[in-house]
Amino acid sequence: MAIEKTDEGLERVVGVSGLALTIVNFTIGAGIFVLPAVVGIEMGAFGIFSYIFCAIMLATIMLCYAETGARVTSSGGSYAYVVAAFGEFPGFIINWLFFFGWSILSDAALLNIIADSLAVVFPVFLNPWLRAVFFFVLMSFMILLNIRGAKQGVSFIKIVTLVKLIPLLAIIIFGFGYIKTDNLYWDHIPSLKSFGNTALVLFFAFAGFESALSVSGEIKNPKRTVPMGILLAGLLILIVYLLLQTVTQGVLGSQMADFKDAPLAAIAEKIIGPVGATILLLTAAFSCFTNVSGDVLATPRLLFAGAKDGMFPKILGKVHPKFATPYWAIAIYGSLIFILSIAGGFKQLAVLASAAILLIYLSVILASIKLRTKKQDVAEKTFRMPGGLTIPLIGIAAIVWLLTSLTKWEILSALIFIAVIVMIYFVMKIYNKEKK
Image 1: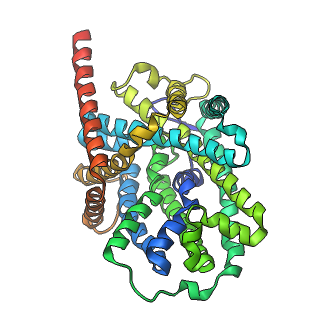
Image 2: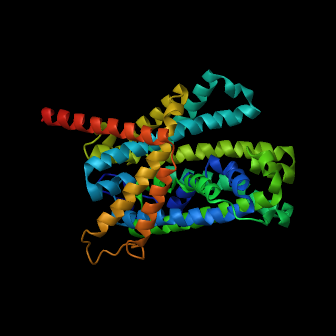
Image 3: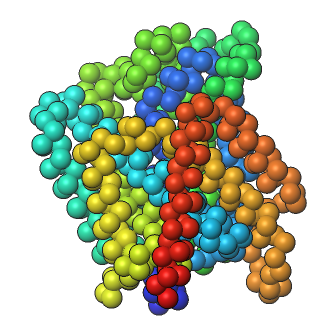
């Protein structure tokens, strides 16, 4: 079957399984190795229901992405959806919030978590020079792999996602034999404050699916693939989270606080001895690596899409003549991650991330509402979420609630960042106007 090439010069090579596993890779990251303890300590056995509540909350946002992603099929994901609905100015802000405020800072932090995890077993990774060389090798590998083709990048993500799920599935399967049923009973319902705190943590544990959609310009038959990929990934993620929480709560129970930093490692140690904790530690490092790999595949497409729209330097919009990938965008994005990871600047800026992703979600939900008002070709059937505006309105309410839960520094950092981006936008407009 011939590969479809888009007007952007890219190739549509990402199918349902590729998109679904990429979403799973982004969502089930390093946080899963401590998440069960965070939930269990705050909520006890009732914590299992918190996952269902947050899954419903995220489902409203996912459905908005599914509907919009089935209609807007150009590169850029969230950015492309906002541009299609509201134009380039809001799109410019969302692009910066996504690629810098959310993705680059997260990736720089993940690279350091990889080195810190390995340093527990191999202390040599505490050496800053060796860490820098290590980061350079990792980023060079990811950059070259993704320049060689989206198909190769997605195939790699599919393989490493399945590999990183194996230890988690092993804990679920073998951990059931160690469950004590008394640990799964609760004698009271947690307070609303405890529930709110847990919901905020869990919401971000489910975040990540939106990054996979940045390759929207390379998705095969997006009208079908985007909704199917989101649905399959969402179900798999919820099942894995629920089972891991059940096993962790059932095995550790009231001892959860004693293993708050590594609950899954504690269960692995109970199953196969001390080597189990080491395996889980290395799995956590590997999970961080797969997350960064996915970002190097997906997020450069935002830079590429912005360049094609004239909002970023033209060089970022160049497509490799042989591999049909935005090679300059990939190389520059990977290089920025490397620079921040060794400079440590991400630590001061990381406060921006939570507000950034919530604002991105809110913008896409509003875009889905706006795009519904635009006429669509009757013959062009795409996924449409049920319930009219009910689901988007629930999503908006959830986002507003979570925004009110952020600290004043998180909100202030986002406002300052947006103000700077607005200034950059108008300076660019003035410069481009004078240049003509």
